[in-house]
Length: 502
Image 1: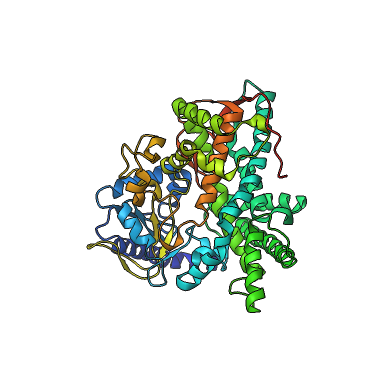
Image 2: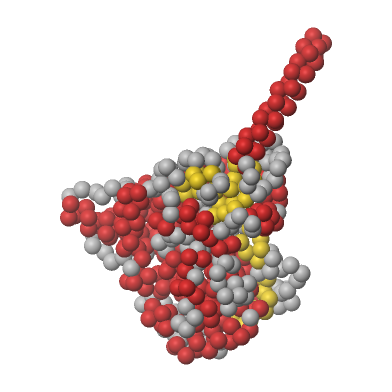
């Protein structure tokens, strides 16, 4: 033992020297990539600024935006990866327009490929990507959206009644809507996307696995037993398997000529038609691949939608004139006492409520950043080239506050037919992305938000429980009010509507 300690002692100067050399080379590598770009000059070994990103993500990205104010971008270093934060709208468009093998790979998460798996819509390029988007198109036709509208309303009503009951059970204590809205959206996504193909037991397992996935998104990417990231990766595998089974069941049902009742049915109806006409299965129509793509939809719809619902409640409460106009418009078009579902035509009639929904998404873009990886060195500006392997973060949140008239104000009228700022400043409205990977389900997402605003404002009276900093931004992993949107609720209508599919 003594000889071993003596041997180790003799090696200590060499080990220390080697460690210092590694740190020195790491700093040199960072500074070489950084060059003259705004960003910290010294970073912690390996971790970089990961601790501040995990502990205070809002402040971390605010500092990156402040650093980027002069040239439109800034840099940093996180868990061994060099990152570039894009503040400028025009530079963000440059990234979005160059998703291809020799430029940028859209990853959805800095370590997304390991987390989401190989069969993933966001990792596709060129003609393959175009072909898959064409196959997905039947999922978002007016007929399909009308089917989803019916399902959305029934689930929204069910949960609004639950929320009001929870609030009434303890009227002096506010309820937090964050997890409640998330549960509502998870049920909505499950029902709209795969409907009858999920049993009650499967839905419970689905919820647990999605919670594990959601937790892992915000943790350090250590793929080791016991770590949240590993739990998230395994949960995704189970979720995809469940969705794969749903795709197989739907395909069988559509082969029998049944009418579609959810998104996967519309998708499989078109797939079955192609198989019948060409006597061969179209590319990317294997059940497992479709299960993976369904998970993409779930990921895109779930937390982003929850974020928008929470901000809608928060902003309606703090802007009573907007709330009054929403209620006046909805009352002219739909009455709860009619016991009739809001039709797709009526949704389109709600011009002001639609403007409110669009302004909520602009003012508080749910997914504030859209991570890409530089596949090759890429000239970002005349004086700076993004090094290969860099994780690039175009900020759609920062773009939302550029160009628009008094962009810091919450003002739905900017989307009116008179002002048309959605047309004038279209390049700054990046909440649904841009370029070839622009969100295919944005009309579905906006419909869901419009329906929620219309029903929530009409059926319930609500008041925010305001405390210092309650409306500050919190990352979870999309953004939501810091307090989870705590409210007091009571029924506003004479009685709740009796809504059903038939």
